[in-house]
Image 1 (cartoon, helix red, strand yellow):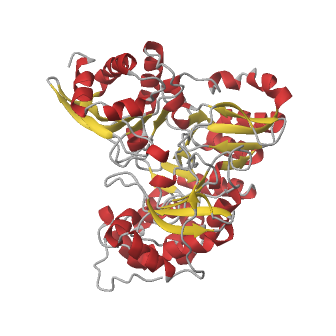
Image 2 (cartoon, one colour):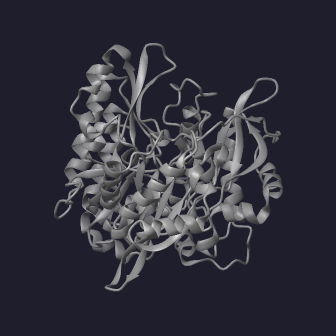
Image 3 (tube, one colour):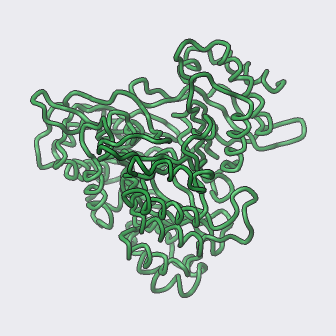
Length: 543
């Protein structure tokens, strides 16, 4: 695959990728860096960047401290895999001192159904890989300018209302791209989502590729194709380009789109070279024509789009399509849990369920295949007092990125603060008729916590106060996906973090007074003028 911008000036990262294939870094870690130490990585130009292709990022602390990301295609883990991952966290993810809120030896469930660990030393990586690969798990291309983890509805195959089980499709796509050198050098990260459910659980509208359930007039079930969605700067909802895809065509389709992106994508300016910018530049019709030239089947017009709503949350006890069985969604606030707790969850999955743990895009987990008669026994287990199937609304919906604790780009601390805010609001606010309030907290503008789709979104900022500069956040309101998809409006800028909880209490007091029957928070926020919302946030803390 070669760029068709033949005279394009390449950015520095592109030159590094041409000089040495990024996937070659794996052997270098095993044969040299793990033996000689972290400092030896600096001796090879561009090698820090190439580490991403095997799921490794340097932490902001520098030195021999890395983040390691594990890919979990479609969010499905066996209990054996989960236990191994939990054991790795308990043994290797240990910092110089415990976090005052989360302790030590923990892991993070992410919004892409991945698992991340921190404080990993480069010398431990080969042993970690050995243990992961022994149970069929990899970190390859969990990061980098290539196909990232493929999302899927976390209850694929067991959901009562799904059109088709999309997990085998997500798994096949992941298998094709993982380790595939021909498609491992794209202009930027490449995110895909596949779902057969009617509730957009895999967030198709904010992925580079979204395959959503559809049906032709003759009853054939498959997918409609959405392309060019994404968040961060230049947030964009994906475009429907009028293509119907049968499940067996999905791998070839995604390969063709990757080829299109690799050939036509911008390799000069890394700030504007995500696929959404290419879709915007070409337009849906031209994009479709370019795709038609690159796949080995004829593109058909789209079928009936079957998505009904956005859910994304599976907390609680829910009946499966298999009679006599239920799944149980557990709340893991901001996705952070001790490695030993994941081991305990793996034991519960094997003891009570079908031996599977499913990871959701809201940083929570699900135990599946539990016989209905054993549900009371499972609910009495001590671990479910920590990761509740019946959390309060704000704790249930809180999502946070890594934040300044580890990320070199984040401006503010996120995870501990998000948990504290959620608990405070659960103590002071009872939203009428709302079982969940989605509160998404990103430490910078990169949108790793997806603030644009939250009821409330936070973006890290610096706030100027009479006492000097302090950590602050921009506050946005009214986001959602699904049939009424729209991003939040950023209504308040650079608010000092200490003023946020009281301001939100004032906002929800107003919501309670003005809420219409069955109205959800994001619907109320959209119909209320931004100037009024801004003033309410300022009045709520005396500002």
